[in-house]
Length: 247
Image (cartoon, rainbow, N blue to C red; front, side):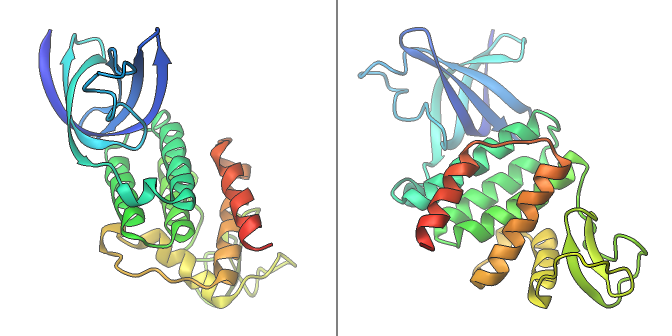
């Protein structure tokens, strides 16, 4: 048994025995790690406040070399305080964590950690939740091996006269290949490509019109349904929030 330290983000928590939890922690160096937090559900436990979903810090653990670890302490880097005091933001953060967990179970590419960390930090800074979430969703498609074609027409390969984007067709469609697919606005076409290539850490402002957001969100929902086989239950709650906001 040895002591190790690593930077990580808690993606999920599961109660274990009468007083403990198992934390699924995403790390950059080691991928997804199960961490046992013994006794953390006891009122007087020093681990109680940090043994939960949406904690980002340096984890100090005992390891036995079997891929499982026992938590000693966490040096907190961020608890994302603005997210935790806003129902809308915490709902989006929960979905982001749930989606990340499903993706890393299929692909533990270390850059997923960087994308997740940047997204949560920007969400905590106050940037638009749905736009950040859509950027995150789009970028994670790479790691599932099913990214849409946002450089040229999905049919002929032309990068000229792109008129719409279609989940059924796998991405952009040009004027010559168009076959009555639902149309989206020119700004939506441009914004989708920007979402795909943008460095999240460098975003300082993110204001997107409701019509563009609606079209991008609809495309991504349909795309995930068609190509990934992933269903994230927490997305249903986000849809309910959006319905209330536009009622």
